[in-house]
Amino acid sequence: MFHPAGTECRMDERGWKAASEDVRLAFLASYDLLDTAAESGFDRLVRMARATFDAPIALLSFVDGEREWFKSEIGLGRSTVACGAGFAHLAIADGQPFLVDDASLDPRFAGCALVEGAPHVRACAGAPLIVAPGVCIGTIAVCDTKARTFAAAEMEMLIELAHVAEDELSLRRARREAEQARHQLHAAIEVLPDGFMLFDETDRLVLFNRRMGEMFPPADDVFRLGITYEEMFRKAILLGWFPESMGNEDAFLAAALAYHRNPVGSMEQPIINGGWLRISETKTRTGATVGFRVDITELKRREQELFELATRDALTGVLTRRSILDELEHELARAARYGHACSVLVVDADHFKQVNDKCGHQVGDEVLTSIAARIASTIRESDRVGRLGGEEFIVLLADTDLGGAMRTAERLRLGIETISIPVRAGRVPGAVDAPARVTVSIGVAEFRIGESADDLYARADNCLYQAKAGGRNRVECDCKGDVWGTALGIAG
Picture 1: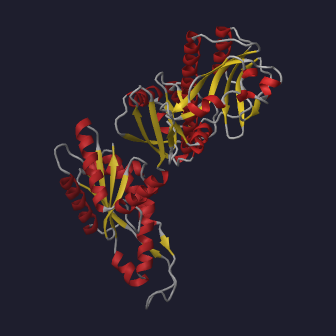
Picture 2: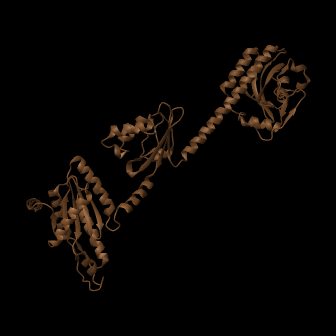
Picture 3: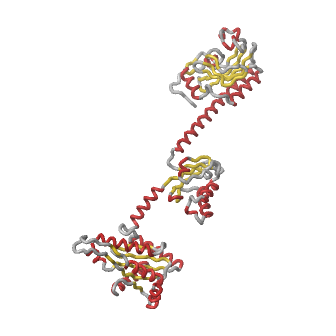
């Protein structure tokens, strides 16, 4: 209920505490009634009053500082009269119902436009519209063009109609305030930096903001009022908005619906064009669903950068020692569980110290980078390569037996043998203007059920030692000669 500050009341001899005129006008303004269009609720009350009292004129009016304005009227033929030229001022003054049997004989209405002019009102009965203690803002009244008296029962009925009009005023203002609040809510939702959706109790979309649509490619038929969440999500999957759903559409939809129907916490979801969303939803007490979509693409990008810094060798870009050994542990566990083959290569650059001494550390770095790049371009996408330290690398070959590992090792050896790094004379004292070349020695070992990652690495490292001892630029493994020969023969 609206209550203007500084309300002042005055009491007359009958106990009516009339608020000051400023307060009364402030209440009137709070209803935003004056000069508004006809409204069915008030028109219905006026028709009821006219029929109940069998009167030619019925009206519902409000009084501001200068005029009496008729919100609804029948038989009067005008929308306003000057303040005091009608009858409502009688109730405004004391907050009481009023009766006028014959206005032509009442000196209070001498010169009154409604009495002396058309429609020549003679009798009038009215009841005040009281919206707060001491605050009357208008009346509901019936008028006759001939003198008449009104029975007490009739006046009681008129007072009841006034109470109904007061309720209608309260409902009208509540509806208006609710509409204003709705507009304010919509405005607030529109400026949210995050996507917002509201689904009603039947799981139909009733509200979403512009940001929600901006997170995906244009598609008017997806974010559409009245669409169910399931229908909306199916359309999004068909449009390819969720890369994870490709080839797994039914299971992906089922998981999304399960979370939507019983949301707990939040979840992160990759979307089209490399984006990421954090999805959070909650159920209201009425069963509606409020959903937020936060764009975390930049956050994911930074996380990936930090992950790369933590897991990638700064010079060569391959996995760090710790990361590749973790990968090895996981792959060996998988191989043991499913009986798959798995092999490792330990690769070490030959005479690398001489490269640094003769050509400089910058050329040495370029050699290491080239070796790493050649390894990465030779192995499969499912394989992994990491730098153990210095000029030593380890290659993890998933689902690869010893023969396959030896063939890969030999391809690596031959490929790295062709690497040539230009060297400018004068880089270091005694350097010559000739390309730097490098070869590698490689130790190969296949995983044996029951051994640890350390055991597997130790066997491959021992084979590397044998390759070094055998003259370098070689591939060695702990296997029988015929197996090794067969592998080399295939490698050709």
